Length: 381
Image (tube, rainbow, N blue to C red; front, side, top):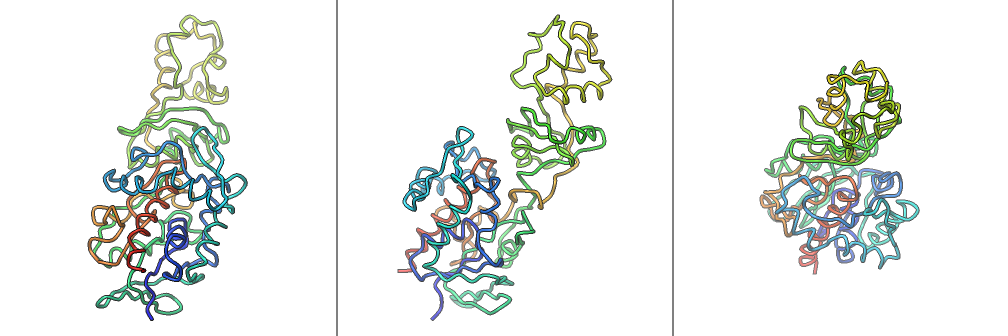
């Protein structure tokens, strides 16, 4: 007897789907020896599950596609689901929900819930084809057949834990467009003019970053490769190429310091190391503010709108997610089924939907899985 559903992937969206589907209706095929590798390493090992602030404005993608899934299964519904499994996420950083102790708490729930399905590990999907009404999923071990296939294989981020392009390859083989992918929620490398940033590695400061029409606020962390930190990771979501503008002094008023006799490095609300590094770069002596020339003040004021073009990003190895993916106009927003091929579904990161830092990508994984499960459950009866 043919399996009704094959789920390709063993990450957050795949495990949620397996948990929501009727018993013995699906096979989960995971390339790694164990499922949920990315869940374990996310959020510093504590897994940022979701956010109290939830809406399409926190996602890069077609809001008309994202909205239905978020509406069907929002952050409150997710928290209720987890509480039924005796997991009570804790609120940190004002709006972000994390596992109390470890990401294992979340993974263990999914491993327990998904036991009602068949789990095939250390099995790599090579290709998917369809003849008449049956899908054939070829792996390195055998050929599986099913009435429906759900691609939940994620993106290209974290190749060391098994990320691959198989989801995009399957989509393309069935006539889907794949929007160009790129590392996202990742740090920026810098040009020669900003190499002095590297000497500040380990220091962080609050900033506001303008990337085109989008604004990202939070901490910027200087790193040995360039810049990172929450504000930068969010900015990478919207950056394609060209310049970004960083306000190193958000909420600071230049008028309030006119005529001040304090040293510049003591006056500006940044770590002294950062201020002194910029002074050195600007060729301005660290002296009482009132002794600055008009030109020196104007140069210093560029810290409120410091503009430069990143050289690139830290790449997929350091990226938390992959932006781009299966074009969403070719997927039904209510069911996650392909508009090109009946019975073929796409959920989670493999789609051209990417959330900001703060639990949004996990929420998308779970919300898209829920929409898919509601539809698939009808054909499993």
